[in-house]
Image (cartoon, rainbow, N blue to C red):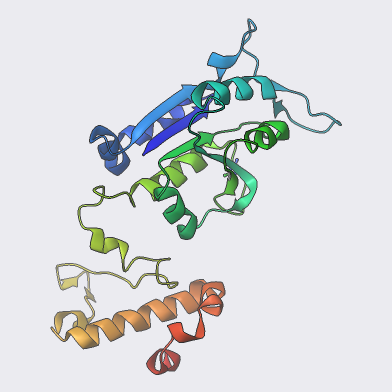
Length: 242
Ligand code: 6GU
């Protein structure tokens, strides 16, 4: 997968060279290209922002450098990426969207700072490529870079060959609509606390039932919205007793 990131803070993306995503880059599974938006400015001060049309607080990113950046990276008439614009005004980023992105050959992240990017950049790009304005949650960040890191990590770990054990993709939170059950390891006793005995019993059926109960209780307490959205057939008679 090719991943381009355009930002005025290229160093902000340095963590993409570490850990799981960094390994995917080193292995050639991800072709990561980080670009400084100011490379597409022409004035002495390398200006990328200006005051908002209509007035109001803050600064808005000017369209010209963004237009040139997109024309250079994805020339019109050629193959086009799916453009991802992180913004608190976007559609929610979910595991379903991560799955979609993991199936794309090419993603381009346009990271805005200040009060955002001139909307004409998004609208113009939309004439030749698929564009998603995406939010990672109901809070406001100072710019799109941290959100791009989050989205990229969620996507790259889904790519074939990235996870050592692809089974960890099947039981995890947000795949089956429930939060994950609590996990334990050795030692069986630690600081007066025990690993739940059922997990040491060797009864695979009872262990599966216990984990399912824990996932249901946790989801009911922490994310009642998720439980309410589960299709009726996702719960069996024993689930309903929990
Ligand atoms: Cl994607 N960007 C910014 N700047 N703030 C956010 C966000 C994104 N998602 C939540 N808050």
